[in-house]
Amino acid sequence: MIKSNRKKNLKIAIDSPAAAGAGTLARAISRHYNLFYLDTGKIYRYIAYLKLKFPKKFNLNFIKTKVKILKIKNLMNKQLLSDEIGIEASIISKNKKIRKLVHSFQINFAYNPPKNFNGSCLDGRDITYKIVPDADFKFYITASQKVRAMRRYKEFKALKKNISFSQVLKSIKIRDKSDRNRKISPLKKTKDSLLINTTNLNKSACFLKIKKIIDSKIKY
Ligand code: C5P
Image (cartoon, rainbow, N blue to C red; front, side, top):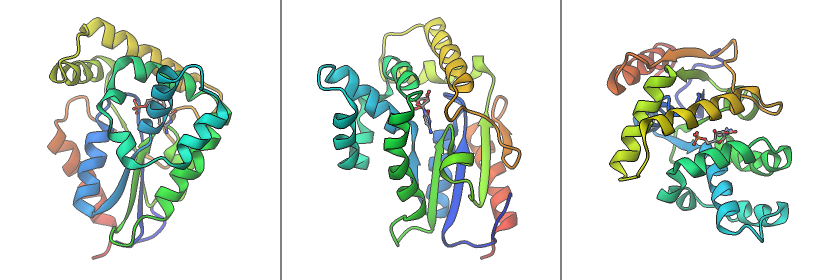
């Protein structure tokens, strides 16, 4: 898995099913190693948001124009976190042409981080084998469906969203099925990715586990 021992231009690729804790971990890892971080799911969520907000204008040209001027701040929109947007994102992400449109944005992000960063860290569904296949570290982060649904449910409650646990579990099941079984860029664990099962681990235990793996391989 490790292609080079270095601290500069470090590339970390993470794939995971929905609500496995990958985003939280990726953010903590990025902060610790000063990496440029991208939650690629937010791009698909942003496109899903455009579809719901501008149904009449929504076509490939419209998406292309929006992706061209896409800024990180567009991805910070709290509305992107809703269950409705999550489900819609997993539908539009099956579209080959849409995936192609966001491909170069992700590549550019991963391979050309600003100079003040030590590298990049991306998480999503196809990062380890499609977007950053030569990553220095590859992780597949997962947890049981029930634990993932409970974590997402708590996040929704914190955001004061009116949604039941069973609804959240149902959405996770739908998205897992769709993300794993689709023909284009399905979610999968590559042979060269390290499996991190977060079912029985809290955030700091997960972070320390990953940090230990990274620190044992990179030179300071
Ligand atoms: O990670 P998140 O749950 O925000 O992703 C929303 C949806 O976007 C996923 O269910 C998946 O269908 C899609 N996605 C994808 N490829 C990625 C990241 C997300 O297809 N690299």
